[in-house]
Length: 453
Image (tube, rainbow, N blue to C red):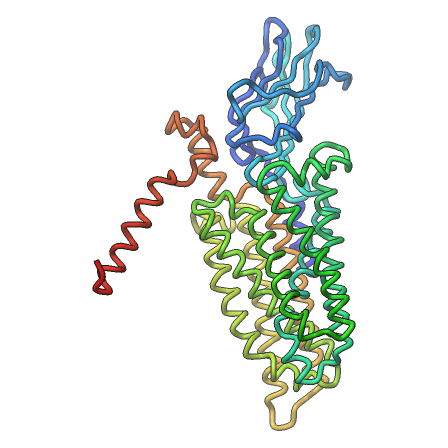
């Protein structure tokens, strides 16, 4: 699993169809008779112009751009960089685009020539490592692990304590979980800012620019509140603060769902809700495993108490996982033909291992003569598979464009609809008026079926 995960994370998509670059002036590989006044790039989605930028260098690597990257008047999908006096030769354009709708970062480059035509059409680095960076992916994994274990433990704490998990260990998770979530998610934000701009200090701009940034900021504020709640919980005020921890943790999971790929799905609101339920169910499943490990010799009694909740959560994880994949993939071929699809398969494999390990410790503890040692080994194996699944889920968030969104963007850029090509990703979902009409019509049908007019 570790080897497969490394392959998935290192994948890079070397094609403009996956990167969102619609047009460039000068065009990639163009040979111009005279120097242009500026480089103008246009994408298939609105840009966060506070973070996106263009650099132009000559054959010796010297910057030839003049001033800062600027927007194109009246076009939120484009940016430009003025050029100085250029001599004949080959020039390299390197661009970084930060999407306004989901905050993902893409890097690309191409060459053009003056008095000559360079070979090659350019490349785009669009894998998770290019978007988030290795440090960002590790931090996001740690933050998500802390957020899931903390929220799920808050939900299962009472039943787990009654089954034999020491209160001190539950309290330790109540404090360590939000601390881990806060540190990990903040580290991921710093890494994303550094990847986008080359400056870690740009994290403030990243967290305040656009809806994804604000959701990401909320995802940091809530764990900070959770640290205080967990400290009070550990001090012995379980009844007062447990449900507060549940609410704050669930809010953190919703912020995580809203800041990801759900915003660029065909139907953003249902996609966000499905992803939220997926994360909340995963929190219950993961917490049941963590509490089973923390129970020590009381593992059999604790697992017997938590298994019903864990089984229901596992079913919900599977169902919502399929729904989320259907929102982001447009065909079976994309499961094996895209990096995102292969990551989905990797996550499914990890969940399958979790299921097998869960069935194993269920069988071992239900025997006439239970095997406590075997139960503890199986629970630990289930925890390892859960950690792997969370790592792959972190990689999925790092993919800049799910296959369905990339396909729609490519079709729009190909010119099937001039208005769609102009509006880009902003016109992926039906207009609000059309959605309202169909929602009202469906509601009227339901009411008529119940005998109401």
